[in-house]
Image (cartoon, rainbow, N blue to C red):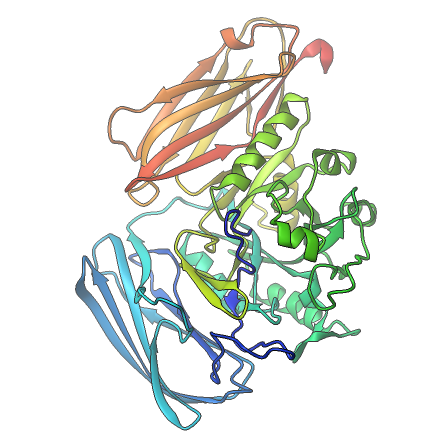
Length: 546
């Protein structure tokens, strides 16, 4: 979501043309279309590497593209270069083109790409590197990415992003990426599904006027049609929305909907009318209408709300009661950053588990474009931000086990709500859990028979240099009667990227007066960056209580 210490205002590619009528100053305003290059943050060497050229508002500021020069460096040495002649006149609201590079002869590891775009606008010949945005201090002349040799197989899993914005999110301060670019970027990072959750207050706008609502909802209809057309037997692109709705205290929260055929109106915090903070729906209203027809997920539920958003936009946070009273089972606590918001999410989730509630977690990135770096408005009309490792498309993933060979959104939704999943920006894992001759998976409930048998975990952990050297395997054991969680830690002394691991848990669950839960956390490290995978729990219930 937003930075908690210095609250950035928006988190998409920056819209640089909007200015206030009463004071039409903007430091970053240009009489040019927004022009930018983006790339996936990683890819396999043996696959063609995509480079995305994205242009917005060329209908207002026509541009003639001349050529594109791409240079890739590693350790400040040029290792690849390629030029593309373009000679295209662009006069449309949105334009994108995907270029493909053959990088199979490059070494595995981190590299940087710089793309210089030559163009004519307003009768002048110009050029820019990676984007034409105006920053206070521009020190970044390259986009980081990583090439790797192998990847975790997706055959038995859904791997993807629960919270993503596209070009259908577009307003006076921000815009997202075209859906075909999102699909190709996610496939490069080994994902096979995405939920497109564009803002409800953008989806009901006219396509050519983001300050005026369209009663025919043409934009929403186009988004549903396009997401469906981009889904296939190997990739699911699922339409949805990030709905602005009211919590139990009457403040505005964000609610992810996925697979909804009907549009749900929500615009109280969209800043289209500063005097109108009303919302058509409450959480309870949406849950009542859903009746299993689509997926509902609280978005970044426990992230603190910056004070200006609290007062100016009437925004609030989800409470535990909002989740429990409405029977919601799946919450998106990881939102593109391992920050205070995520830590508060983990703490609230643990409290729910220790209260005996079966609530599961998932991850999204809240990316609005931003395939490898984060470019946005930090202070409206004054300053643009540029950061790495924040709200990057597909960086944090939710990995869901398929229960059959059927690759469908219905199966994905069912398994996600069962908790048959884990979240990760590091290792992947295959897990087998055994008790009393039966096998289980994350999200399952195990009926303990009182015969002092062990719960057996057999893990296969798959990492890589990019995903990090495996450092620690932790079993988090919640003792519900004692309202206490203990951690059974196993440190890995040797350098390992792939590991088979077996652990029996017996003595710790010998109290017949308590129910338990167990979830896993695997920590890894890549060049000082801590990475991790955290699973959903298995629940242990004694037979007389089940």
